[in-house]
Image (tube, rainbow, N blue to C red; front, side, top):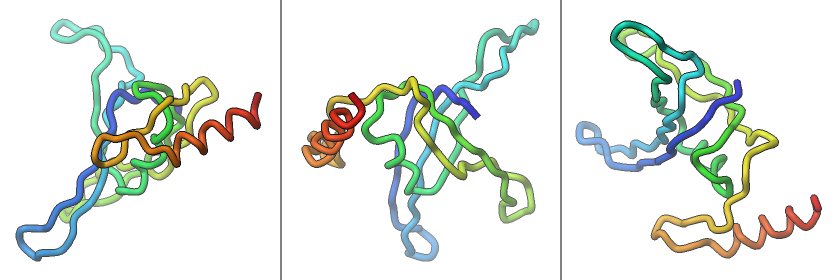
Length: 123
């Protein structure tokens, strides 16, 4: 589903109860349904949690931007459906980012070099 992504973040922390690692990512995107009601107008921004690995699918592309995202539902601990992401692909109109920040906010020359090579191959 073509989706306009506004914001992507990731997290990794230690679980307070069990002490294990908890990691994931959050993607905030625009709902494709316009709302024009008495008490609401426009498009709602929605947030979905997903696997930590999906954060890297957005690296090297400008955010906000268009991505082809497949969503899936899984049950939570009480059996209620929870929306998640099953795959992410950049849309043809997705723009490449010139720099890709790493965890410290510095640019990653490895990614920059990879992007430059791919752009040379394309054009």
